[in-house]
View (cartoon, one colour):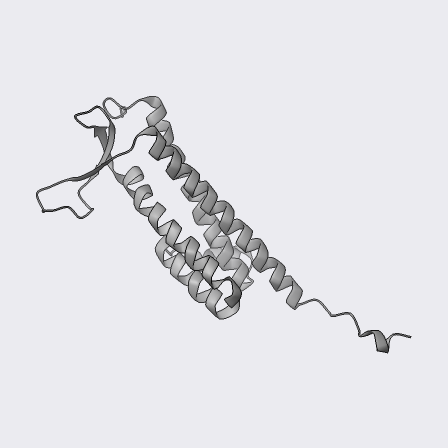
Length: 171
């Protein structure tokens, strides 16, 4: 049976899990935004976005917004930048190797991140306040992407409405 990492508290393991869970919701919100821009159903949308990693989805969102909803371009570029910053923390939290540092703080380490030499391990400390901030940032980003999707869906439905006839043509 797999045992939890040494010296990590259940509450720390729980917050690591929350980062993963809320990130999944954020990824889905980004997918749904792509589907809304393309005006495709969920089945077609999944076929388009399922094999694409988050960074590529974000690039796709910017390109699609630029082509189809230019007034939202700055907002989408800003949320893309925010999500990319959150992604760096998320990746270390979810994929890092957890332990306690010499001051007994929870620390995630990685061999993948750039360090000052190939023989060094990169690590960052993740106290409760930082983890809470990451989680809240992911939740806020997901909510913002969801609200932008609503704007896009509303704009798309407006395009297909038959306009009311001008007043002078009514009898």
